[in-house]
Length: 455
Image (cartoon, rainbow, N blue to C red; front, side):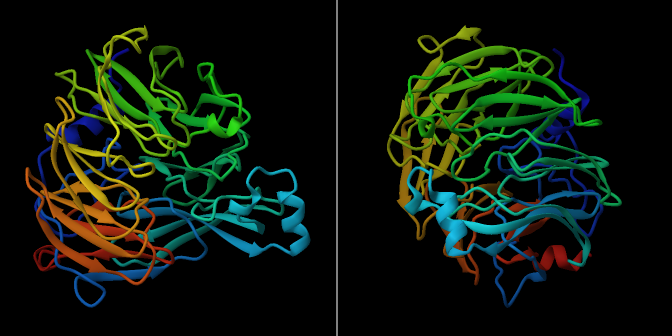
């Protein structure tokens, strides 16, 4: 399959074939999905604020109702996020919903939830649309660290796709906010929804790795109709809790062909996006509950490595050569390592350097050739958000509301630590030369003096 035009644009943004535009308020800020244009956590900006805080560099701050750990997406001068407003469960509701749940002591119960999509003006922070999508009076329990709106939307020009796991997927008109269609693929997430959707041409790829069923599906972006469904490979684990995962599809091009690469429990698999047919698979071990997204060190002209983490259990980083066919477990694993590996945050790569922050704040730089350690340092806090690499700096957002900024390079150099006043669980986004941060109750745009002066 040849690379679709939409994916060619994504690679153009990531690999620099689209020329940069001068700084200033523009309408071309583009952050269409989880972790940016290619889902790799890399921003295409000439500069980025590194000296900012609640008392300086804050262009605007907008209160967001409810709770949600989805990241912002940006197109045509508008920011979209999802959120969920919950009501408190009564003791009777809590007891009833936890009656047949594994590990009920680690679950949070809501009385009801209302799912919404919110559109914010990029320039002013004004809320343009607040769209109620659905209400559920009997939501499933979730993990206290999760939310009912953790999956990040994806935007393709005129359409916005909001995904809430088994609660449904909505397609909205990105200009008016009108609902075009809705579709539900119901599975048991056990701890709530997590993985975000991705668009490949005429396919909206949805990952459904529950404790009761595990499959990948394609929906028609125009109609919402299911186009194909592919079951995950068989697993050794018999307990569904060890079969679940929450990863987001990664799109890559290998020797002129498009692959959709999706880690899951025990297996990581590459699929043909138009048919759902498996291209290759690797048995990575017994890892499960994978919420991170894989990254790719190659380009359309050079085959690199698919690098991913194996989630919970004995978490490892595994690197795979993606040019095989079938089960390539014994032939295509380039290396693996298990020290300082995150269970939740994704990795980010620059050239031969891989950067990762584990859940407890250990920041590691690896050489992607052989997994040798370039440096390893501890930074403060606990982490769920994935790192952002932009303009030579790596942004690390912890759950305690602190952003640590590290300079990209072969040595650890901490540039700044910035204390905000709310929990940070969502991964940050880039708008032109500015930084967008979603906190527990707010959406904030931070700017530097240089970019502010150009507006």
